[in-house]
Length: 430
Image (cartoon, rainbow, N blue to C red; front, side, top):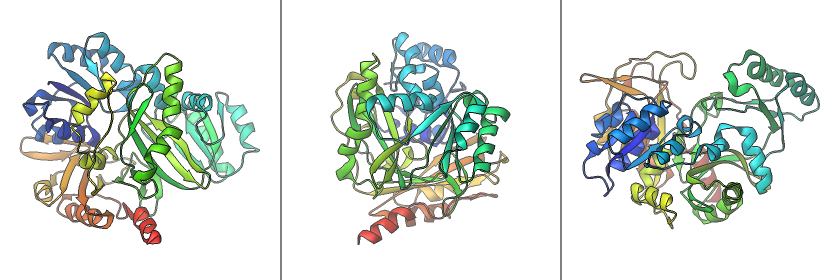
């Protein structure tokens, strides 16, 4: 098969890495990454200089190169209708259509679907008028969560603990427009107490097959402090959502949404990711993503034993039954450029990845890199996701951080506590 992976981050490197090892792929050169990065190139894939939001260019390339399967990585091409366009061109694509992709593209749409489907979530109100939002805030309980409705690169959510903070967030989104049109509409919702966890399912129609749970670490510094990022690390499985509860949780928070979309005439295909808060009253949905999370994708694919290409084809054909994963734990630690998530430099030389990759159970995924001759240079804020397997969470963590120490990149920073929440929960259970 000839397969096109769309995107340029760590998730896309992990997808290329796993797809290239499928029995359905004869030659890694038959895997294309648009635009890809230094890591996808190292897997033997063919990088293509087409951006992920260039829908016309991607469809034209797929037709010209006789692509058998298109795999969009990030949310933007999905919300722009890449799957619809590929299917219209006679090319199979793994992902939801543009209507279903609104689950991530519009938080207000997701809330409306959840209400119709009876999915547990935080109480909320939606505003397009600044004065109305401020008036509602006057009586809202604190803390309060303010969300830009549209796509904001994972940074459009503010947990405001004072009314001043909340007013500032509303003003930033609706007046200053720090997120552009994504803040034309905002969602204000109650703050949920508990522990966050990610549940990703491979879906076709009304059927959801859960992957093992994962836990992302959004804030930039240890102890869940500092500003939100695209994710500083993840691990799988997360003890807060054990394998024994995956099926019942999927039936509560994923399958009702699939049925509601089906009722509206849109059958869901692809990954549906439910970001959950495990509260005293059970799981409640914080958000939906319509693709693999990043950095959750990297440890999840490290654990996956099922042939990923066959699983994707089975989803598209409506016949996926199960997913097999190793019993080992996987952890991914993100190494970021100095200054991230604020302003950061690019073009920083990176060394030591071959040495890290030689360690048992380790794979270094490239999130933001490029090659310049024989040199590997940084090309983004999140630069690497150093991922490792281990017989348990403690061993996986030790293996991942041992690999991090092999890598040098001037000014690089990373969290030192990826997985610690899970370790504390396991120790408490013991």
